[in-house]
Image (cartoon, rainbow, N blue to C red; front, top):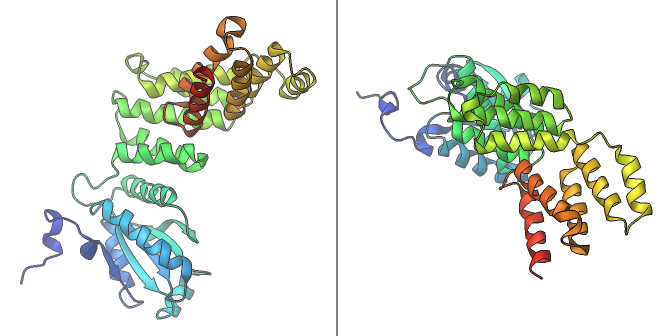
Length: 316
């Protein structure tokens, strides 16, 4: 008799082959044993749980999209109370990632799609680090992981972004452009957390051939902006508030905001200068704003919002 599941390496992965329900009797095979091959995501849920009804389908969609790189197992805690007690499940929904027979990550409660994707990427990276078996190409896709990392960074989840950027950098050769993109992202995480020296060290190690890559150039621009001129933020703010018509004071305040990592606030301050006097100081505010866009990146929500406001001012 043909083992359909065993023959599935060349067959398309579907929700039916990737997602299943299990019990305390099947947990060892469905999770502990299966996670020796690929990461297994375990969703602990209950029929009466409202958030479970939202999270479950989102998890299933994300797992199916990875086309067999991970599997998902669902456990109804009402029907498997002893198992839930053994794993110390305190509430539902609770989701755990198992790799090589042990839990490596998890969360409780409903989370947005971007965080689900980041969670799955971390599970894939854990599997890669533990040298799971599986078919070639079952490891995390670098571009997909970077996309999730970028979204996590834009959402302000620096820890997740840094983990994903670092994981991609470790899996790729140094001459790979995606390796440099990952390191640039990691440097931006350090910048956003105020660790400029670590960010500079990472960027200084970039291959010269990748210096012109957009992600690398953007990170270096962000570092240059963040370094600023050492202006004291509180002092600059007090001066700007006391002299609202002094555009030099407003500009100095914007520079201090950038140095403190307050990029969005700095953009609004610079917009205020441009709204009052477009060509002030040989277009200094607009030039600084364009450099800020380069530093943040073209797709950053802050860039998109401020660029729309700038266009409205310039073409009004």
